[in-house]
Image (cartoon, rainbow, N blue to C red; front, side, top):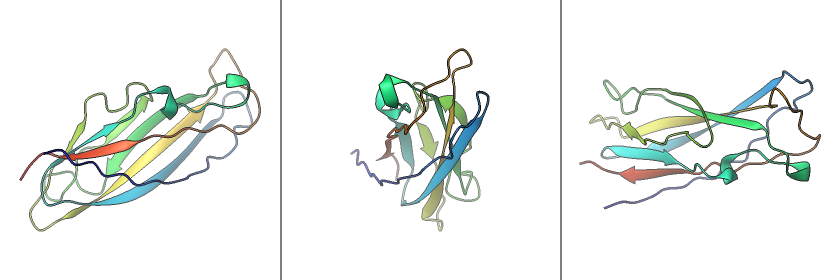
Length: 136
């Protein structure tokens, strides 16, 4: 049986003021688990930062957990990946008895394409993470 959980967070990244600047931010959610789960991501253009005139920014995401699945419920860190390949293979969150929650932190990273500076203005993206329960 697959059950999905969603939590919505609004986060504002700092302005990118120079060609080579990078802006990052993060949001954390707490998942309550009584079994193993998989976490997957939206890899559509909805997850890419887009703004005025249809310009886009290089958009990458990463995940960390407060446990590694060995001594505490969690998973290994998922390094930065482009929005279109982030969690192409879902990450397994391993439940450890007696630890029924995990803090999941999603990091977002934005930067200009090296050969093209995007228009000034507000950019937005929506990254949807889906939790599917898979184990006892």
